[in-house]
Amino acid sequence: MRVTRQIVCFLCLTLLTSVSRSAPPEMEAKLQELIQELQKNEGLYPSLKVELTRAHTDEQAWLSIPGKERIERVAKISLVTQGKQFREQIREEGEHAVISGGLGGPIAPRAKKSKPNRVKTGTEIWTEVSNGQVCRILNESLFPAEKEPRTLNGQITDRVPPLPNLARPHMFLSAGLTGDPLSVSLQGGDAARANQGSSSDKNREQPLIRVLDTVEFQGHPCIRVRKETSHVRREYWLAEDRNLIPVRILSFDDRGTEFLPSSEAVVEDWWELQPGIWYPRRATIKRFKTSRFRREEKPVLAWRMDFAVQSAELNPKVEASLFSRLDFPPGTSVSVWEDDTQVRTYEQE
Image (cartoon, rainbow, N blue to C red; front, side, top):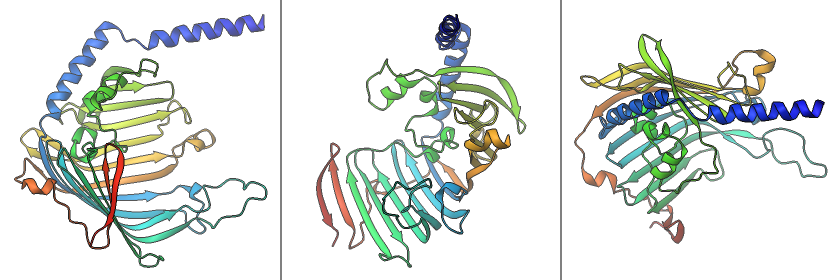
């Protein structure tokens, strides 16, 4: 009898799950109309020039760094885009974790105990230049107290990267680099894979995406859109008076609770680049320690990033060479890639 009840419950749950994967026709029509409006608004930013700072505070206790509960660093970011071409430089100064002893937890019997995790202080400089056909990358590490106080690594590749999120105001609050515009992401997995040049995968779980309602946040009327799978639920609050740019994004995952978000991203201030065309001016992304939700029933900060835009310009005048030229300093170890295969390495003289 007990087994029978379990089978019935399982079948009911399966039926509910399968039904929930498909939205009613009127909701689907509303979503498609919203996606079309999103596409129009994304097209308002064909070329951008942005200067900003990003302050990163990491409070991950699992780093297990003796005497260190918080790691802080600040990055100065400059970005210029034109179509699919871009030039981005990130100069980040401050503390960086060196993981040598693992992320905590027991050590296997007879295993050799590794050195403890630690913090190194210095500067990381990342420069990436793409003209839509070839991408050049230079990474320079400057850490005076380390054995190798300066390292230089370069790369030339025909694998063209997507535009950085900061180049797409509708993706500004997205911490991960997806490579997809928001209008594509809200069409589901197949649309995203097609946008990336991949074939459809019918065996992969398709997210349920639907327009929920209209709410107000920080004085902005917002259309709230939910995208969810069996493991993650994400809510986009699209500001109707800000070109449908998300003013808030909430994420929930299966490690947390239904009501406490695992992350929250918010735009706090705006630039009006041209009449009626907006770009985030100040924003914050917070990630919470979901493992402590059930114990403390409140968000506990894991890390946060604070963005402050110093200048933003729409359709700047730029030289074409800006997206193709990147000089490697002498001593740079350069790798050359074609069709995802490393074909050459050399040291810049």
